[in-house]
Image (spheres, helix red, strand yellow):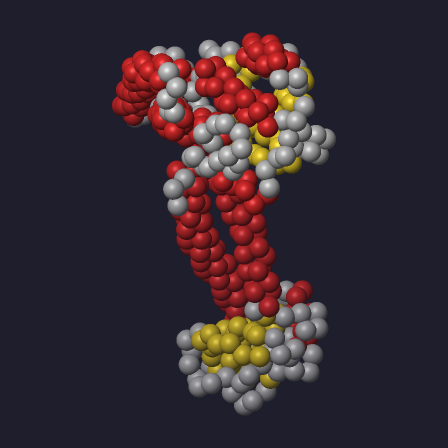
Length: 450
């Protein structure tokens, strides 16, 4: 588990559950003991009342019912019973027992004894009984009993009430834990959002906007971001310097080969080799730029400018070759890609399309439903067979040698587009019948965030 939020919430819930379970068990045990004590107090009070009544009315047993005058003893099978047994075996019982009888006394102890037994309805009863010496000196056994069913029902009601209360407390505790985690992790969420848009923040993040516990990390991130920006700037500058340095000797060699060709020497193989060398160097420099590029860099290319320039250039090239070139795109669109890299990609792709087209090349750019920009370049040429499409973006894969070229145009375009988080897809164009190249590029923000 790597999420701090998940850890905090899970830990809080587990701790709350443990506390609630222990609290519920402890409180339930305490309430049960209190209920048992109250039950026994009531039963012992009833037994004491019965003992006093028997002692005062032993001469006239007919008055025992009135002497032990609790109304619950008058209701048949009410769960509350009394029974008096004399030494000679005579038994007097409460009307609530009807024709049933409580168990006979065990022994002749004058100390009160408690025991459980089954009552008239086979319910559990708790009874208290002891032998009492009455006025004439004889011993009478006085016994009262109460049903445990009411006690058990009371305990069940108590447990349900406690469970409901603790469930509500648990629910509120979980909500509180979630709220607390959200508040505590808010600075980290802000930090994550700021870091995810690191290239769209000039000067880094403000340390004062974060808690003191996070401030050292923010300082380190700012340092790392600035170092990465510097590394990428230097790598791109070095690639540009190296490319410029190589162009001069390459141009000299090409001029020398042209002079030899004008003097009648066969230098076609050397020219082809130099073309391939230039193309490979171009591919390498493109990769170097791509390696120094991040897909979240705050760069933007207005399509109005870049595609407008391409439209004018390739309109002229197409007319020179007796072909047509059309372009359609909505105004105001911006792609998140360096303009020089974007124009290099578009130049390679349009050059390929114009080279292979029989008579027509079309360019279209629009927004997709998922918020990206789709640029499609289609021609009416022979296209690429499905089984050869995968090779088309690989370095130096020339699928047809009947046309001049190095086979690196699509490969260079693929590397650069991928470096900016885009994709290139190849398919057959349904309208023109030739190759359709689809570029999916991220949309650039209209302005830098404050």
